Amino acid sequence: MAVAAIRFDFRRKRVLITGGTSGMGEACAASFVKAGARVVISGRDRDKARAIMKRCGGEQGSIAFVGGDIGIREKCDLIVTEAAGILEGLDIVVNSAGIIYHATAEETTDEQWLQTMNVNVNGMFYICRAALPHLKSSKGTIINIASDAALTGSHHLTAYCASKGAVLQMTRAMALDYAPAGVRIVPICPGDVDTPMLRGEFRDRGLDAEAGLRESAQAVPLNRVCSAQEVADMVLYACSDSAKFITGYPLVLDGGNRA
Picture: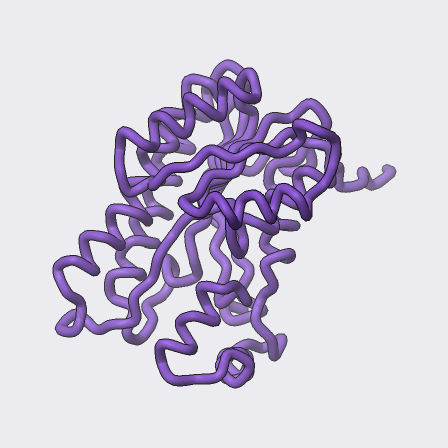
C-alpha cells in the first residue's frame, strides 16, 4: 500500500493566529502564507505586525493584522469577529499568545498570577468560544499551544505550569465536546523554544541569550532547544488532512525528554 505524503497545501484555508507578531505565532503565520492560506495575525504591536506582513510577502491580501489584547474578553470577541469578516469565515485558529514569569509560589505576586491566568487560560478560552460557531460551519481546527510544563512540573514556574496544565485539560474537554461537529482541537506541547520570549527570560536571569540556550540544551537528549519553525511545522501538520484523525491528545516537541 502506498504511503500518503503529508499535505501542507492550505490554499483557500482561512487562518487566525493569536500571538502572531512574535516567536511561534510569527513562524506559523509565515508558514501558512507560504502554504497558500489567507492569514490574520493578532497581537498588540502594530509595528511588528507590519514588518511581519512585509517579510511574509505572498499574494496581496494573503495576510492581515487585527490588533487586540486577549487578556480582555471583549477584545477576544472583536478579534474573532474582525478576522472572520476579513477572511469571510474561519477554518483554523492557532492560539499562540502567552506570557511567563519565573517565580516560586512565594515569589509570585497576585498580579503575576492573575495576569498569567488571564492571558494563558482565559484569553485562549474566549478566543475558542468566539471562534467555535465559525469552525463548526467549516468543520475546522483549533490548535492550542500548551507546553511540556503542562505534562510535568518545572522549577520556579508555578503560575506558568498551572496555566498550561489548565490549557491542556481545557483543550481535551473541548475536543470531546466538538468532535461530533467535525471540529478538531489539538494541544501542542513544546519544551523550550528559541523565541524572543525565551531569550528575554534568560536576560531577566542575568544570562546571555546564547549561554542560556546552551544551558537549556544540556537537559535535552537531542542536545538543543526547539526552533519556532519546528513548532510551526507541527502546527501545519496538525491542521493538515494527514492529521484528520487526531484530536484532543497532546503532540509533544521535547527533544526526547519524555522518552
